[in-house]
Structures are given as structure tokens and as C-alpha cells.
Length: 412
Image (cartoon, rainbow, N blue to C red; front, side, top):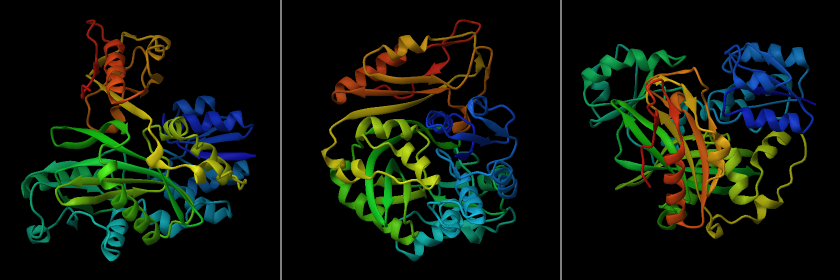
């Protein structure tokens, strides 16, 4: 069977490898000429994951049996459009795929269905001040159809918005930007699966973020379980089910980001995919549910075994884990830690770099600057914290002045 995978970056590598292991012919489309995924796939095509018509041509050329993506938002819409055109299996119809990848449509559905979210406005580059009269500063400005924290800014005045709107719109295919009231809060992510319209919540994690100047919400870790789970699990479940119903999600993975602050839960955004913080590795490790296999099999029209999903109970999961999405200072890489040694440390299950010796590391402006990741387990909170801190003590990316470029933003 032939499977078209949209994207050949680090978030898609595991899907390509798994496809190869399952004896599936893998085709990767990506607008980069030589992303890591194309080096291990059977075929690579120089087509953007956003390009619907281009991917329809690729699909016809290879006579594919299925199409999928993971770990990235916008290609979900392309996946649904291609699958619909070629009558291939798809979790989502085109309307739902549009709703979960376009924040203008998403916010409208939130509002119509009384799903809690922050106050917002939609503006273009020629906006007038009165269009924002109902919003309190500071605000967060975002493209309505981008990903990876690109073009997202926390701003304190109308002048700030005027200064940054051109950059925000440069990451969008539309001429409007989303401006939201900033909500002082902590973030959580809800990973789950919908089967026959029934919602199964698999993981709730704390999404640990940092801000760099006006850049906001860059994710540096996912910690399981969320510290908010005990107090908010009923609200999280209720809101998650409400979203699934409002967006008419019938099948497949869900990945919802929520904010928890003094005014309770506000939904930040929703997606219908496996998360981009290596949830395809974390979920089976913590639950026995092989969510990556489920996506691949469904995309090829195969039967899925839902036994593990049906028997799983989030509130009985006592495991402790963290996905560390580490960043680095700017510089040219002279040498890197031996990852075998890192993985031999207590609790370290996986560790990978996104860069190699000789690469030039740029300053951090969004999530694309991630230097690598580690998946770390602990028997309890204290041992997890020790294991994380020990891993960072040993993790090295040296520049030519023998400075370690790795940054540990959060000491556990």
C-alpha cells in the first residue's frame, strides 16, 4: 500500500519510519528539498504541505491508498481536501478540517456554542482603533492560519499592533489577523481520540512555555500529568466533549490547548491531529495506546483495534513523564553530546538533536528554533525532577569557543 505523508520534518519522522516498518510505500511531500523525512521515505516530492492541488497531483502520480500528517496544524486541511477529492479515508470532512485550521472559523464556532474563550477581534492592516475598543491591553496578535508560534506577539498598545501586523500577516495566506485579550494563565493540552462520536481523553499535560521579548507561548516542555487535572478534570472533560460536538468531530485524534487562570478555563485553540511534542511516542509509553499506528491504519482504510483505548482510564494513570523541547543560544555547533550516553541516564527514554555539527543556530523567535527533545520518566514528581535536571547537566552542544549552547529554561 502507498501512503502520502505531508511533511518531512522531525515531527513526521516517526510516521515515515513506522510506515516503512509496516511494509508501506511512503511518499513525503515537503517544500524543503532535503528534510530528514525524505532521506528515509521511498519517494520525496518538492511540494508544500499547504498546496492542495500540488498534493492531488502527487497522490495521482503515485496512485496512493491514503494520506496523513501529524504534529502540524495546517496540513490537516490539505489532507482532508486531497482525501475528499480522491475518495480516500479521512477522519474529517472538509468543513471540519477548515474549522480546526482557521482561527476565524474556529472562534466563530466557539462563540456560537458558548465554548469559553478570550475576547477577540479580527483586523486587517488598515484597521481602525475603534475595531479594538472592546479589548483590554495587553493583547496577543496571531495569524489565523499558521503554526509553530510564527508571527505571534504579545503587545501593549495600538502602536505596537501597527508595528507588528505586517509581520504577523506575512505568515498567513489571508489578509486578516486575530487579536485576543491576553489571559494571565497556565496552559494545558488535552490529547485524545474520538471514535464513533465518543470522546476518549488520553493525556492532559502542562504545556510549559516561555516568552522571548514580544514573542509569546513558545513551548519548552509537556509535563504529565497536569497539576490541574485533579481540580479541573470534570471541566476539562465537559469542555472537550462540547468542542467535539460543536466541530462535528466523529473520528480520529484530537489535540486541544486550554488556558487555566482566575476566570477558569478558556479554550485557546483546537486541532485534530497527534500533538507536535512527540505525543506519538509519549502516548504509547504512558498508556499502551499506539496512536500513531491508529492514524496510519485509519488513513489506509484498515481496521483499528480499539481495545486499549476502550479500557484506558486517565484518572488511574499514575505515571510521571516530561517531554523536554530544548532550545539553545545562537552559535555554530562544534560538537554534540553522545546521545547513547544521555539515554543511559536514569529515566531518559529518548533524546534527539534537530541539528548537527557545523550547523549555525539562530536566535529564538518561534518553535522552529527547537534544538532537540528528550522524553524522561520518573517514579514520582521528585525523581522526575531529578532525572530532568541530571539530563540537562549532561546535555551539551558546544560552539567553537567551547560554550555549551543548550538552555534549560525551567529548573525542576
